[in-house]
Image 1 (tube, rainbow, N blue to C red):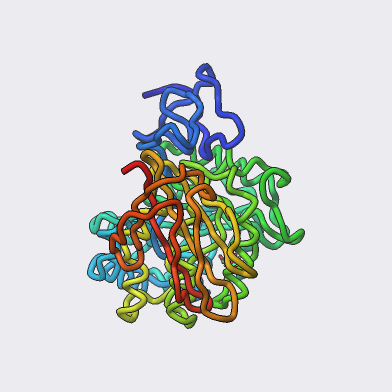
Image 2: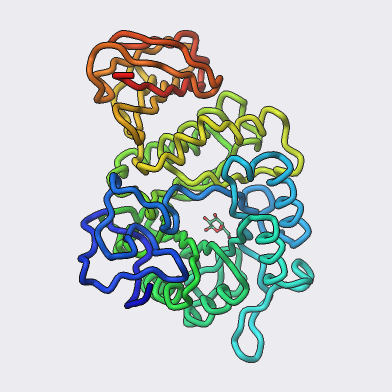
Length: 411
Ligand code: GAL
């Protein structure tokens, strides 16, 4: 396919006209636009676009901070395959900040040779050889958040460098006097490379909030994913706070353009119940599943959480709807529902944010299903629970725990 420029993010707020010159680049159209330029709604189906479902992978920052290296990244790639993570959909292995040492005399970005002695292209080849993809990090500023070489003024040159290395994912992180205009520049530069590169941006800096529809840039149109808040930490308060920030933003998410409440903290010190709640809510919110733990040495419990295929299927559902809070069953007892593809199908989270164990009941009418019979499946336990009339009650949900269900009526 040929033609004019494509757009990355997709159209949460309207779509592009079929005369807009939208084309696919490098074999796949970007964001939420179809290759023929029609608008793409969350019900339209979106195979073939970049980020048709939320990205799944791993990133070095949460566990390793400013110390990524090719040894680490290769070990993580090996573990992604041997642990079974790749088989359930994880594919991006992402280098965060601190991979670069500066620029050469031509202005080209140079990797820190002490951390990446074989260079980034070689690392990308390694990932591709395993059926995985490589992600990288930069900042639209003079320096990155960790004070390393930024790419203000070098957006086009750096996009070309990333494409020439075979990079598949860019995290572009507002920091240190960065320029909002660079987000569009980088979008255009990535499109111009002709390579399919998932474009993940973080416009949140200084003011503390930059979410649709008030952010000065149209995140859903120019990126595949945008951070909605400050950095996640491995605490209950942090991940529940990000859930609350994401709660009113569901309408902006869809195939090719996702809200990003940040990377996962599963396996980094919270209780197993809290880790399950975190992961299940990221599934309900159609959030990125970018692991942040050391997957080379994770426990069996952590591995089981990160690889549960039924929970991942909620996140990766092709409809691409972000779930919403539909009701409460008491103080801090939240009922969330995510519309799934197919007829009358919902993923439902019964989320106990209270300080004691609890029973919770979901009514079919709360989640937009007709009264009558519906089948219920327990997704964490991968077990069909049977057919129920009008409602379902879960008992003994532990404090900070969650029950995740798939409910289908008329079946
Ligand atoms: C922050 C960002 C983190 C990490 C860090 C690197 O701004 O939110 O996820 O990328 O910069 O310095």
